[in-house]
Amino acid sequence: MTFSAADTLAAVTTHPVNPSPYKSAASNLMRTTILDGLHDLLLERTWSTVNMADVAKAAGISRQTLYKEFGTRKGLAQGYALRLTDSFVSAVDDAVYANEGDSLRTLYLAFTEFFQRSASDPLVMSMLTDDPPPDLLRLVTTESGILIEHAAFRLAQTFERSWLRASPQGADILGRAVVRLALSYVSMPPSNSADVAADMASLLTPFVETIQGTA
Image (cartoon, rainbow, N blue to C red; front, side, top):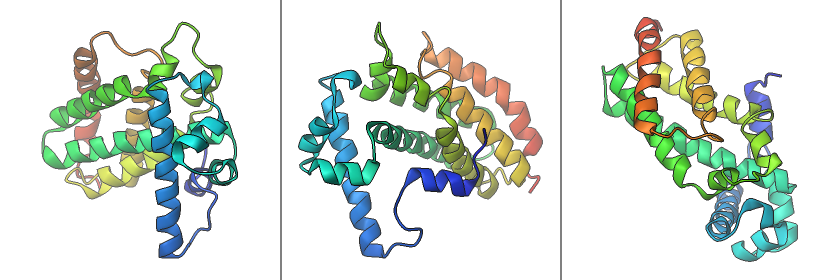
């Protein structure tokens, strides 16, 4: 199943398309507070032992407010995963703009940063137990469409607007490839992340050089 950009945005938030600046800022602050509370809980407990009441208490809000923001426990996990995905996209952005003209180094640093961030994240660590939660595994496998579309869309914009000057088609292909490769390692991290980052950078660099300047 594929998702359009509109589908992705609708899945990320249930709030109005054009909220007022105040409402938007308040909503963002609320979601950040909730996700920070979940993060702190997961530093001490696994995902399977955390319920919505625990998260509401950690965030200092009511359960009604929590359900209004995320709807369900699955929605909460998805919201957390989307924020983690955004941090990966930001790392790729930083690598792109800091290494103009060097596709290989850009990709290597991007994947290296991803491995470092995912390895230390408590939600990801909840997947790496002897009995990983099925709902989290689905989030990065069979139900990963929203994460892929969200991240690929943002990455494609970077690849079009940066020094790469890729065409929309080339940027979209590269964005999806980077995200899918990264996600494939979430539930089974590499034993040597530096080597794998180098391998993936070598694999994708020829394509990056092919689409560079095609806009």
